[in-house]
Length: 381
Image (tube, rainbow, N blue to C red; front, side, top):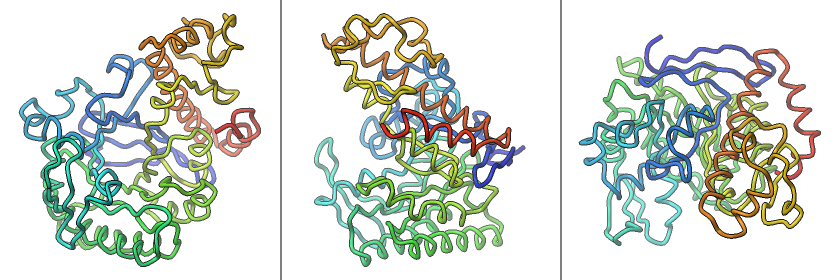
């Protein structure tokens, strides 16, 4: 199996189980990716990531390009050596971060000018610049530069985002030369199904043209521009049709989503990969995921509760610490509280997706889905 080869291990309805090979090993889907924005998953060491069976770790091109800089990371031997993570890694393009700073962004066909949040300097990125930076950082999977429209946005604004993202996808594919990386295209189109399907069509045309000319195509596809302020029910009005319009033999990555119930529903619609800061961010706020729903560890009912955090969980935190102790750490502001809850929450999502894969391979995903949707946790997420 060559780098960027994808194998379909099984299907159940629209749900899929894939194996994808990278230069740093295989990963299997459905899967959740821990977010290591600045080459660090907040509160979790690399050894702990391995302990909870992390596969792919995501890092952010915008933040790494600003600090410490792509050249320094390349000097260190690439992002894997820099942060001592030997598994597959993905970098997003930084497009979401750029366009979230709308007041400082100047958008042109050639690229985007934005203001650094670190020192206020004006910076210009073209698709070619972005590819150069991501190739220096050296992740196994990199994402095209795209424009991510907010919600709500006018149809005209979203159409412009589709046009720019499509044009930039073509330029990113032409500029990407690193053989040990694979490039994913990104679908945009807001909540408009026709614009979403137009974006898919244009990406596939770009892919086919490049392959016909002797080049490489996209190794997979991100589905961007969801979870940007809309209700999740609005997302699900179009998500399934968009996912299934993409090639069956390549991964489909729903960007920026980490709600457990949303993951279970999206897998049923044909999505394979997810990422989000939610598990570590909520942990730092004192909230734990569980099979019974969210647990606010500041709650007084846990003060004398010496049972495991989640009795159904096999993570090292649930095996070794009680609710009473975790509540104590959170209440007194001990750093260890956020660390332990981060480890637990990450394990919770990784394990949820591992069990989803098992259900797909057993041709029992619908049963898995119904069991989750009828569980106490489903409505709480």
